Length: 515
Image (cartoon, rainbow, N blue to C red; front, side):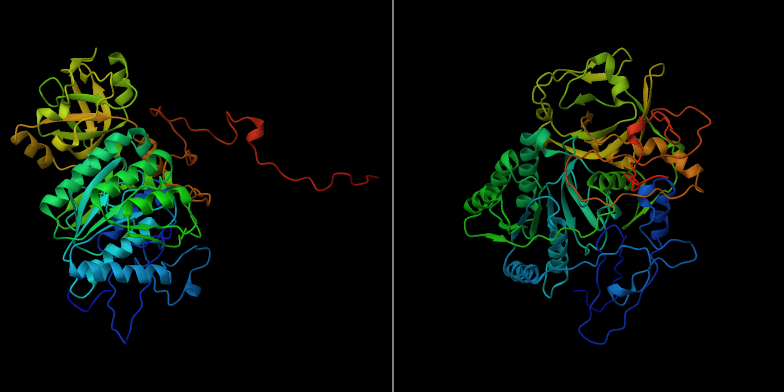
């Protein structure tokens, strides 16, 4: 509930997400302003088709359009209004009332595409805007595949002081003033199943920080849609250690999951009806790409986040002298590479920048050894992860290239240099973690889309949303490439495609008599 005042609430409502609905209880004068930061966000459509067709298009139009009801939706637009079922509203009211009496903890869990993020967002906003409500809400985000306030592949503890009125890709920065990331850890993977033990360790470290420094604020725990087998065991462990009120976003089981969560939560368990999206113009992989693109193009500017809508290939890289103590080394999670393959493996990949706060974070890992290019490589044959109690992620980088002659590495990152300077000032080492982040294929083609603005907007197939690993197809590039582009091959028409890949058409004249 937004109350009259001098505060301006900025809303980002793209068509690919449910659009917030404004309702008033009495005659109200509502002032609407165009967001000065919206233009730079919209211009990301120049670089990726994923950001096209989700706003009011055209420079001459305002950044918003007034819709009295859902019947006022423009032609050829698929817009789903944000709705909260009666059972949701009843539970939200009880949670807010409980939080006004004493700080509370609420864990929201459930299957994929059940409405967990929507419910968590509604609860956050009601806690912040209710009469006598909290001045801040702490979000413990444990979903590396679909995080709300940080880039994919990370877990974070976030202090939220402003109602969340935007899609996740509108606030992906670790340095946003309105959504302050207190501490962040990287799994180097968007799938918690690839590092279940590390996932739990990170969750407990973040919760310990909340308990020590921010327990006066209500806590909301956002979880991945992994509710079976090992994922269920992980959920039960988190519930037993945090003792939150558990909200399960499904009334249809599975019963094994419901029984286990009920036992773990004791009397604090509630099952609510799920609310999957009626229309989905983007898959989970698309949304992850959009959030990662937004992160790498973000430009923190005071309390508001803005974006740099130009291809990363034109951005000035940060040069790391890796033999001059620029970094302690590169650590590989999961599958281990041979040292002579490291340079090729990290080139064009995303790495996590981890500040090592204590030598204990290394858990006995050996000293770095140089690769043939001189890159310090930390051997990790037993797949040991950095201890989250003594380390933290301060950002992500995209490796643009390795110059073996000059012993330097060029990286692209929106991370402010002050973050690295602070770590070095405290005598902390920097380790770059290479794992199973999604390949940033979008970065390899941005300049092609930017150069070819006249091409038709690529259509995105409407599919059901997933929240974990999926193999969505890449958007076709129909552009002319005059020069060789690393990692990119442009195919035209049915070039290099088998005959069976063409669209099959039904023959309706079979069996028809011929003269």
